[in-house]
Amino acid sequence: VPGVTSVAEVNSLWGDPESDVKHGPGQVKSFTIAQFSRVEVHVFADTVRTIVVHFESPASLEDAARSMSLEALRPVPIVAANGNPVGQLYPERGISLVYHGEPTDQKVGRLQLQPITSDAFLLRVHSDRKEQWTQDLADLATAATLSPGDDRISWLKAEILTNQCEFHQAALAIEKALAADPVLASSLSLDLQ
Image 1 (cartoon, rainbow, N blue to C red):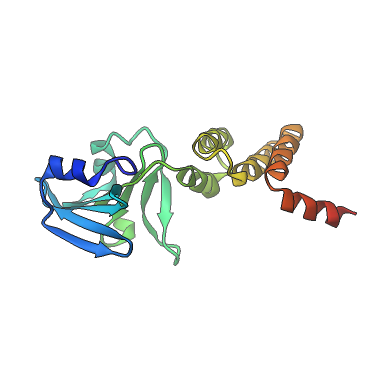
Image 2: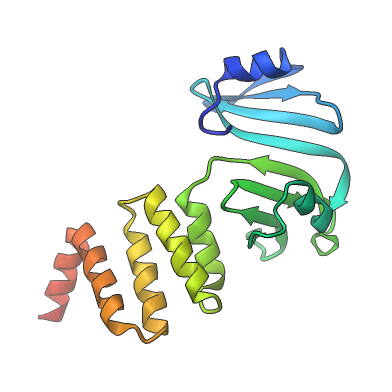
């Protein structure tokens, strides 16, 4: 489990890695596991941070999602800096399905497991906040549980509530965001005078 599992636990489960390469402040340990081309375990401070599973051959997005029981979840597109889709992220599971080859083919070449974080839920809200407001508010509630002090959550909530003409609730969300950021609150007070 990324963010929880130790290197010792990985080694007891999969044995010694085939390669162990220092990568920045961490390590990348590679294993060969049946039915996969390669499994990379990215480690930092003796804890697994990410697991990358490379498929023997690319699978359709639908087949990959079905094999991981993801079909009932709402993914968020992963988009490269140039705007091209490179995969799909499933925030509830911390799973990314990354495309291989042409993005339009939607063939999945690898799967990435990461800790479940508020950032993944916020990314989904940013990707569609004008379309699925009820789901976006639920995503913001989950993000708030994962990162209670993140004032971005209150700002996004205020925006969504404003779009829904829930002005009183939006004002409460703005007050909460301002209370969490006294510097911003004081600068806004100065601007309003």
